[in-house]
Length: 522
Image (cartoon, rainbow, N blue to C red; front, side, top):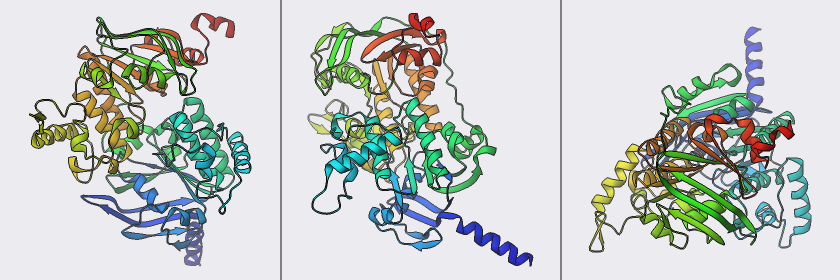
């Protein structure tokens, strides 16, 4: 009798698994991305997948979504073994995926991207589609105009489009691959609430994220993998953040940056009454003034889309200014080219690593010297010294733990998002710039990598270099910055010392409420 009861319980448990991936193995040249991994997701569950950059999380989900085919193993959906050869097969099974790197056509509208592949014949009704998109976006707190062009909207907005694309297709098994990487704290809270509601409705959610607090906030269980191998499945409510972090990276992790007091020196960057137009031809940055000195980190805090992109593009030469001045080491660089600014000692970790940070069709080998390849020792008499470049690039890859199948010969586009980010940071920090502009420097990185990158940024500051940090992670702003400049609506609201403020006060300023006005709010 007990055998029958146990068997029935086992069968019942298996039937509750809406997704089963059993014995999954996937190899790429020089690397085993998934090594006999098992994943079981229950109906109505939020199941997190946690692992280091390059651990194989995205590969595993790409197999489930039909972008890759497993070399070994089986997939079951609702207890039935299936073959998922492409994303259309996945959609037919009710599986949708929000990708870490956006799958968007930049010269298409929001609506056109969302309905792409779902048009329903030779003629499609864009008005009806736009109406449905507006309804879905309002319902889930993802407000966006359907007629906006993708290349004209922020990275955060593009993330919303990816989420809406999945919701538009009525998927009931939802894969979120680093969905909050570029969202504001408020947007993250909204998304977490959406996930809980969707799970309550019976939808199953697979969440890939490096943010342990998000896992603690919404996930029921968490599958942990390391270097392509299964480590454990844990009950999130019963497992501490520190324990999950240690299982992920194989060692204890510190979440607090040790930073000694530092007296800043002379100004490296001086921004004076800067005005910059955005893509719509209106002022995105308004009468903005700020200085960044030697030996300090100045963090820019603000809700995404409040002028940060225009400001950084103006400083780096990617966008022309309307008026005002940008001085670097006392020299007006407002009219200098990007190359000239780089040559003077300006480093830039860009917001969009694939668009601005790397040439994806080039190997890591050349991406590491892309700014200085024509200079000695990388080039002599116009001829590249490949061995010197190889050694230099290998040193960066080793120091910053950039993982890939074929080392420095790997194409940049074949690396995971986190490893692409580490490669860019390694390149920029290795150039030892007088000013390091870091925009979302730890986007998509695991806690171990974040710990290392934070230490590298602080090390630049301790060497007497200037650092301008832009991050939508207030914890990161407070953890790294000596001073915080708050931007709202393109205007500088206030500049405060980190030790003299708190998250609540900065949050009010991000909403446009100046420090002097807070008494009126209370």
